[in-house]
Amino acid sequence: MKKYNVCMVGIGAVGTEIVRLLRKRNFPMAKLTAFARSERTEMIDGLPVEVKVATGPESFRGYDFAFFAGTEGAKGASKTLGWEAASVGCTVIDNGDDFRMDPRVPLCIPEINPEALRANQNFVSNPNCSTAIALMPLYALHKEAGIKRIVCCTYQAVSGAGAAAIRELADETRAWAAGEPMPEHKVFPAQIAFNVVAQIGSESKDMPGYTSEEVKLGRETRKILGDDSIQVVSTCVRVPVFNSHSEALHVEFHRPLSPERAREILSHTPGVKVLDDLAASEFPTPIAATGHYDAFVGRIRKDPTVENGLSLFVSGDNIWKGAAQNAIQIAEKMIEMGLK
Ligand SMILES: NC(=O)c1ccc[n+]([C@@H]2O[C@H](COP(=O)([O-])OP(=O)(O)OC[C@H]3O[C@@H](n4cnc5c(N)ncnc54)[C@H](OP(=O)(O)O)[C@@H]3O)[C@@H](O)[C@H]2O)c1
Image (cartoon, rainbow, N blue to C red; front, side, top):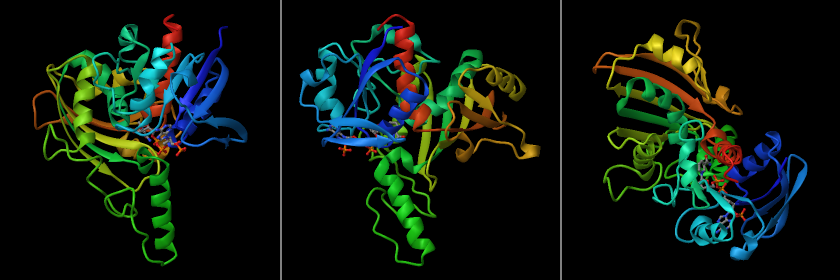
């Protein structure tokens, strides 16, 4: 079997899980290198990963895949190095938001729109973590009954904001337990321990009053499902959970869809696990979803306030399916489709 030279840019919360999952999934790797802002050796699960600093296109020559998990924005890794890596034949799979809506770039969840990969120009984007987790159950229901509108409320884990955010929740919790003064919050706009914070990202210029995270959910859903008519409105909230995002989804369909039929469809949908027995207190939780490939879905019920409405609750590992796992699945799918 052919083996591939793999590199990654960024070795924080997502980058570390990319390394773990490449090993766990036995990705056919000949070589693995990490690039970050300083040279060093990182130990991940007792095995060393060599970390270098990428300086330009030449750093990526000879690599088949580059998983980008650095920071976003003008000075971020994807904007400064992404297309340079692509220019020397290395396929970039980018976890950030910089190019998700770029018409040159497929935005892919392999279970949903693998065919989008055929148009890749050595650059593919991974969706936002909340989009990926919501769409895992929704795509199958969309095929059945056609989604008209989604109202989404998220309960997002701190790991979604990176390694420094995980430390911030741990430090605040430790200070509270020791009866010490609360440390100054640096990553989140308010104390996150024992609190909920209704701001993820900055205020959107396109949709004043909404945050960048809330806008991403709508536009990425339309691009991935290939349907510009789907309306999405959301409130994205950070909660004091270390890992795995949860979302309450209230969905209006074009055609009728009963909870029983939805449950039956979802029980056969790849990448989805149904946990839905309210009487037995069985429903998805972020703790249960952590470390699983599937998105967990439950609380499937009729929404009696609209025609053809269904409500459901989903929890999924934002670092796995919401980032590292989906990125690796894209590479695996490209190999399977003969694109690499
Ligand atoms: N966390 C999630 O659930 C999630 C989900 C979906 C997408 N994402 C996206 O994935 C990306 C990474 O997120 P994260 O949570 O892993 O962040 P993180 O924990 O803060 O780690 C960032 C890593 O990127 C490296 N880096 C930053 N700027 C760089 C540059 N210009 N060149 C090379 N390396 C650079 C850092 O290097 P040093 O170690 O040397 O400082 C660090 O290793 C972000 O774009 C984020 O939006 C995250």
